[in-house]
Image (cartoon, rainbow, N blue to C red; front, side, top):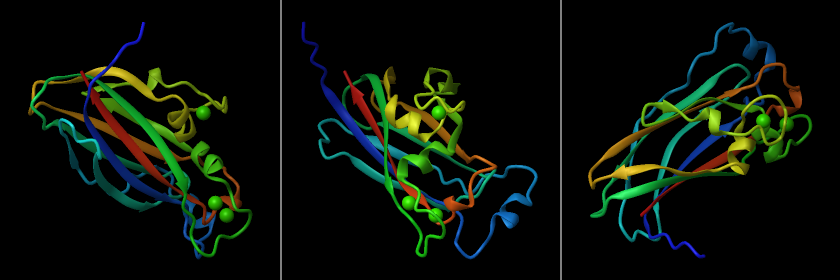
Length: 194
Ligand SMILES: [Ca+2]
Ligand SMILES: [Ca+2]
Ligand SMILES: [Ca+2]
């Protein structure tokens, strides 16, 4: 049996996470004892019927360092004319390094694995427990998000309905100096279906 789903909305949110600038050292980075969150910019993604090309929105650009979080709240809006029953959320990333890039050039997968997912809320509830530790490193990270996408979440209901998606990534502490200058450009894709 083949199940055919009608895609009624597609939204793409991009964010850039860069590793520590090359001019600063880990000593500076690890001086802060408590994690702080970088700038948070709220955005609304309008997911429209038959918007095959998707809606693209850049959320924020931030410099990461060990122990520091970057968070963002994305408001998902059903801007179409149909109710949307399910929502799929998937992640991808590409390498996006600083120049110069000291030490070893870490791959995008290696960088993704040190970006721990510390907050993952949808419609007011955490969905972090639904994410598998795909690379079995002991924590939930961006690599896991890419390889274990969310499917079939409760959709947005009636047109004009909104729900918030809240994500925070925290760079792991105790990582190699080789990660300086390495980064990734992350794309989040939101797919509404009936
Ligand atoms: Ca790299
Ligand atoms: Ca993991
Ligand atoms: Ca490096």
